[in-house]
Image (cartoon, rainbow, N blue to C red; front, top):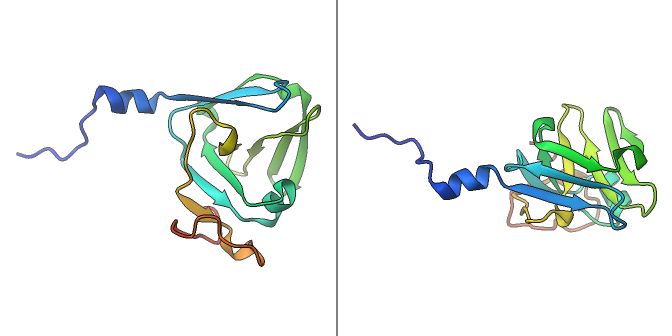
Length: 144
């Protein structure tokens, strides 16, 4: 009989274990994530646009795949909405990560090495008069 399950190759095993790193501009905060994100997106919500001046690229990881290497105790933790905390460096002001209501963590993809590309747009109904950053990607009015 034909087995339709994906074949594990050395490359696919490597991809699952890829570690991506990022830091704030002054390097006071440094962190890493392992594996692929649950999803990556352009966020068009008002809070992201106010914080960055534009839609923000975010990727979401579970706490098991997220590790702060240094500087978490130096972050400014701002509750931007109920059960959401935005964490920024107290020295240089860089956005470092966001705690989400379900325990997941959102990371700024523009700072990740190696890169993660967005697969959708979220909070499209909240974009105001701004354009969708990547109109060829699916648009959602909330978190998928």
